[in-house]
Length: 337
Ligand code: DAH
Image (cartoon, rainbow, N blue to C red; front, side, top):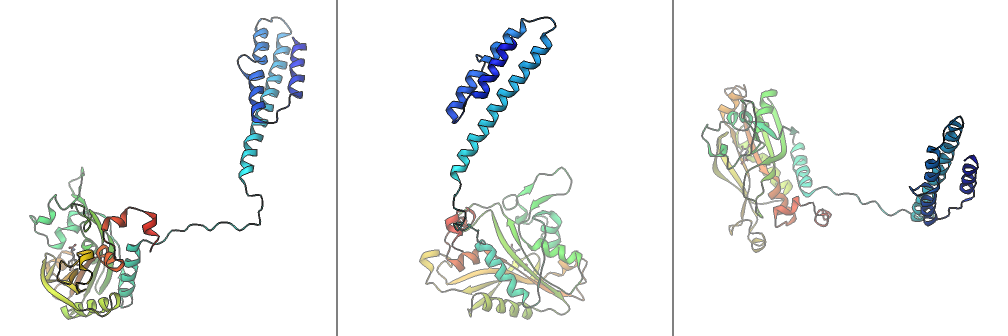
């Protein structure tokens, strides 16, 4: 038996493995179920007596040797295939890294923030999952207001008595800000909002808004108008604008602001529905009820607020015809910005 083991040892030591095919032959010959090692182990089972222990040790040694040689060779062949893929000339210049670009919505958002920051606005943020109070009640939405309806709002299943929803507008951040700070407050609040709407080229179930809020003593509608004039002149250049009376539960009086684009691009984007005017934001004087809800004295303070959609302005700026394109993550589209 010992002789046979020694013989196998010799064979292993002299066995030459120089490619993967030989490695497989080696495995079959020595390591497989029908291989020489198994044969010896089978014979070993029949041995009894004092030598059994010694022979067992020798057998285990040879098995270890066989396996070591197999593993070493395996390693060598796998690394040699890796090596062949490596660039052999390390002085060659590397190919340029592909870096991402900022999203068109991010560009426009930053541009808007910058304009308002230049006249003293700071930036605030709030949560996208919002409770009923901040999204609706504090903003003076009556209990049965249609905007609370399931059709517009994505409610969140909750086991608590508090109702939660994905915020439908960034106006909820106004409330948080007024609750947590003292006037004067002059802030811009950008963020993503969600509405349960049919998806089309012009509307999506989520989009982006920037909210503006200024609360101080003796703030007037004239302040609001001048601030928005300034914004339009900086962002769009000298454009005609108009304010139309409107209604929002949280402002009184309320207005919507349109800018005049003309009808030249009309066939392309059907943006202005043939009128040349495009609505870009809602605004107004903060309703005294909202101030009261946020523990701000409406006798002492007044303020204005506005909210604009970033997506539409982005589409306008870059001539993007379908809102959905901005969220498909198509690299060919995104690389253009
Ligand atoms: N929250 C309104 C919306 O999503 C937009 C808005 C209108 C915001 C008037 C305001 C405002 O702050 O004063 O349609």
